[in-house]
Structure formats: structure tokens, C-alpha cells
Image (cartoon, rainbow, N blue to C red):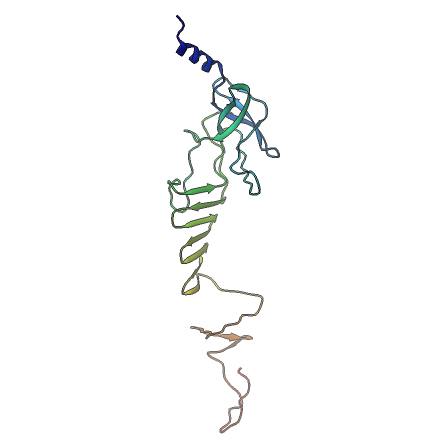
Length: 226
């Protein structure tokens, strides 16, 4: 007597199953890839690479050569597949945020450019990383971003920038800059008081230590500051 469970198992096993592979070629124009299927080591033809969003809003992020990806066979057909998504492995691990020094946690999104590239030949040593590459990290209460020695932090109530030793903070108290001068090639207008704790210069003349010429008693006018 034939066991229908065995027949069902044989039919399922005869169909091509999802599997893993390594990207062997990338076509950024068509957002397509070739994949070296594992463990057989057989290269596919050009396959569509799944996207995060397609439509009026489009997000394109083709994988690197050597990236570990999931192959999904369409309707069990081994000749037709789609590169469903890249996956992290023991060689290419999730990145750590420059802001928190931790990988992205549940409820967060972390984008780090310039990471070490996957081994192109399926090896175990990633390629070199790009110095000072940009990154972006959104957490439950803060948005961080940066590139090299420049960082930006956005929270409810404040926005802060830091470049080297110069920092600037905008909050309900106003705008504060520390560590460097403020320069502009245009006019500056203040509705309130302008305070110079050390001095104020006008055309190179000190507002603190200048002298007046032609001082006269009564209602006479002095000369211009010197």
C-alpha cells in the first residue's frame, strides 16, 4: 500500500527549495544580481534583487559582490528565482553605531556606509573599511548622524552639531556656539541687546578702550571714537 505522506514528501523534495548563496555580479542599473548558489557552487543567471520600496518613493541598495543572500525559487522552479534579501553571517556582522557603540536594537534603524566589504571569493577576511564614511541612526528618542569628526543629534527640544572642537546647540534657550568664532559675509541684525563680554570692534575700533577727541563742556559734540 502506498503511503500518501511519502508521495507528498517526494513531490516536495522534487521542487527547488529556497537556499543561500553569494553574490557574484551586480547590475545597479537594473537592480539585478548573479548569485553563486551554495553549497553546489553553481552560478545563476541575472536575477531581480528585492528592493525595500518601489513606486513613487524608491529605495535602491544593491548588495556587494560576496554578500550572503537568500535565494527564493519561484513556484519551485530551479531556473527562476529572486534574490530575496541579504543576510548577516559570521564574517559580515551587524555594524555598531558610532553614537551608542552598540548594534541597532529592536525599534531602531542604523545605516552605516563604508563598512568592511564582504570577501569577494567566499573567504573569511572582509575587505578594508572606508575612513570617515557617513552614518545615520534613529533610536526611540534620538536621531543621530555623522561623518568623520562631524556629528548631529536631534531630540525633542534640541538639535546639536559638533565638528572637531566646535559645537552648536539650538534649543528653547536660543542658539549657543562654543569652541569657535561666528563669521558671516552679510549683515547681522539683532532686535535685542548685543553684548560683548570682552570687547566690540567697529571698523577695527575698540568699543571698550577707544578714546574721544574734541571733548567740550556743555552741549558740545565730541569727535568720532579713535
